[in-house]
Image 1 (spheres, one colour):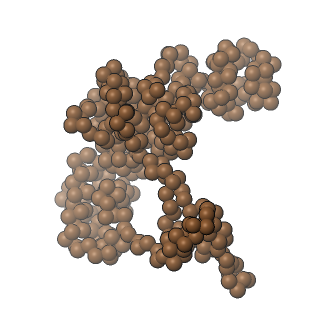
Image 2: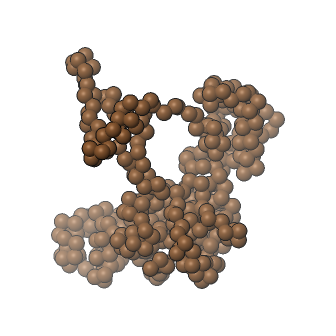
Image 3: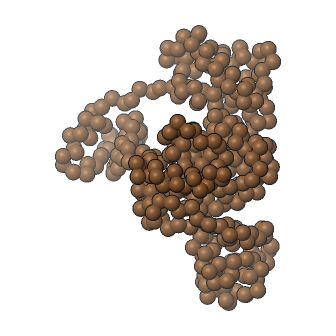
Length: 371
């Protein structure tokens, strides 16, 4: 086994060392059981000066202790909601009995402390109307079951739903900033030089936000807004190099942010169906735009197999921005723009009636405030 890299990219953190446990798990795969007398694992150092440090940090170091994630009450809340929504537990006593057999309890939590932690989680879930509690009986609501299936932090769901209820109009900025404010989303660091630009943006776009601004200089809000602006630039086809320079990030950071928010947008679409049906359509469009990094005008094209953001933009810029325009142009003309083989596949789909979506003509402007 050759372990070439011991650093891994984590969105919001950059390159971080892998845990000792993970190194040992990889090294332990060296050698074939019953065939080799021993296995060899090689950890590659980038320089001679790093050899001793790698011995100390990985080879001679003990593995990290295994800790229960249920010590984090947010994670505990998610697990309790899952247990109730799946019907695994139906009563408070059953829930406490289950928790008493977990690693969390084994690690030394007293029964009283464990009971208090469970009570706090249940109190939040009841107040959020994700579960109902009648006496000892516990049952998940439709809302709670949906949150559990979506596999998002119940606190994130509550932030999203609270903002959606009563929201009359959809805005890209409102949705993205809201999602970046949730506990599930990693956000960008805010530099001093960013503050003026963020304040300027808020002055001109305050009415587009879905949540009130904390006037106590909340760094979490500033980070959520900056991250939302990066994602907005991505969805408006701002170039990767420009985004990296504007927000002082790397391509991996962009990928991490897009991956993180994409699932939250997906979850928001399902929550909107339950609490704000009029927002479902625009959120679904934003889900596609964020996934592919495209403006709204390319949505009719992007749903065709074989057409990504580059080919879709090329077609649009050549006056082929709708399915009807593609049909009218014919395979030969379309082939000159995207290649004959791809054009043939596109027209196969058009003949089968695929890719039929509502045409969107509304202009979409970019929110480029960092540069």
